[in-house]
Structure formats: structure tokens, C-alpha cells
Length: 237
Ligand code: ADP
Ligand code: TMP
Ligand code: ASP
Image (cartoon, rainbow, N blue to C red; front, side, top):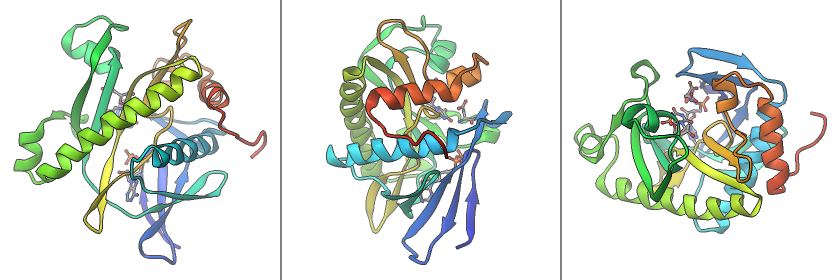
């Protein structure tokens, strides 16, 4: 097993199977494209259990994804993908960069939900891109663009329902996709690090905005979401 890639929050290792990787969820938590990084106790484990639960749920909902099995408290085996270097963002409620860019009020309901592509490039602060640029620079093919949009909206419908049953609002989220053997898969992770979740009644923030805005109680909020969704996380690592 050797280290293949270290990102801001996860590390990927090769395994004895060339088609599979070990994905280790670290406690590192970053904001503002890696400008601020802190270690939050238990975060790696919580996100690994959270992600495993969501990926297995999405599989049942017919969304092909890279998750194979959980291997340890903080690590899972995933299918090795050739990642498409764009981030797919779906929004149900205006927040974050949408409000900054368009001057709209946070909390505004977006009906129908919106879709945006961003280039995955921290040095350039993940600039927004579109289909035409993605094709011109060969980041993805036309069919892959269509499929990423279709899967992203399907993830939204499935998870909006799941979260709403737990009294939670899925405000927005970011997905990454990759290709293996000519097939497109959802990759990376789905956890409160890459989405916004509010309590439906109180609008309490239960995601990484707590870290970005230095509100405290970050991992406690992630665990509250996990508990409400029925994700089982051990008390002690
Ligand atoms: P970042 O690269 O954004 O700092 P992470 O720390 O989460 O983020 O690193 C995970 C990296 O692994 C990302 O670059 C992501 O695109 C990549 N990745 C996620 N899933 C897979 C996969 N199944 N195969 C190959 N690479 C993956
Ligand atoms: P934004 O409001 O900053 O554009 O983010 C929209 C959603 O996507 C939010 O839930 C955070 C997530 N996101 C990431 O997790 N990583 C990223 O690099 C970006 C641009 C967004
Ligand atoms: N994921 C990016 C970072 O770690 C953006 C963010 O979450 O604020 O810096």
C-alpha cells in the first residue's frame, strides 16, 4: 500500500487491487481553498461513516458511485476513478457564493433547484465554468456533462427527501465525478464538509459553515445530522 495523493481532507492509498483505492478521511478541516486548516477531533471518522451511509443509500437510488466498502473507522475502499476536474454544485436555497456573486438574499428558495460547474483549482479559487469551456479544454465530454447534471439532480431529489424526513433542509452541495472503464461514477465524498444543512424549524447551521464562520461545535453538528439520519457512529474511535 502506498500513498497516491494527499488532499486537504482525505488521503488516497493504492491497494493490492489496481482498480481500488483506500480513502482515508483525516481530521483536517479546511476553508477558503485551503487558506485555513485545523484538525477537528473525530471529524475523519464521522465523515467516513456519514459518507458510507449516503453512498450506499445513493446506490440503492440508482446513482452509480465509487464506494465499495468501509475498511476502518476512518477509511473506505473505493473504485479508482479518473477524476473529472470540475465540481458540480446543486442549490435548493440561496447561500454562500451565490449570494455574494448575485446579491440575492440568503435563505431564498430556489425553485427549480440550480446547477453550477466550478473548476477544481484552489490556486484560482475554483472559478465558475460552463459546458462550452469544459468541452473546449477537454475536461469532460458532452455525454459526461449531461450525465453529471442528470446524476446531480437525481442525488438532490433522493437526499432532499431523506434529509427532510429527519427535519433537515439540504441547502446545497458539491459533487465530484470520475470515469472508470468508460463509465461515469459519483466519486469523492458526501459529508457535511461539502454541503449545507440547516435544521428545518430553527434554521440552525449544521455543516462546514460552522467552521468557515468560526461558530464552534463543528463535529457536534455533523454528529447531530448523522444521528438524525440514522447513521451509526461509534462513541469512541
Ligand atoms: P482536495 O483535493 O479537494 O483537497 P480531498 O482532501 O478530499 O480534497 O482529496 C481527495 C482527492 O481525491 C480529490 O482530489 C478527489 O478529486 C480525489 N478522489 C476522490 N475520489 C476518488 C477516486 N475514487 N479515485 C481517484 N481520485 C479520487
Ligand atoms: P459555495 O456557496 O461556496 O459556492 O458552495 C456551494 C456548496 O458547495 C457548499 O455546500 C460548499 C460546497 N463546496 C465545496 O465543498 N467545495 C468547494 O470547493 C466549493 C466551491 C463548494
Ligand atoms: N473545500 C474548500 C476548502 O477546503 C472550500 C470550502 O469548503 O470553503 O478550502
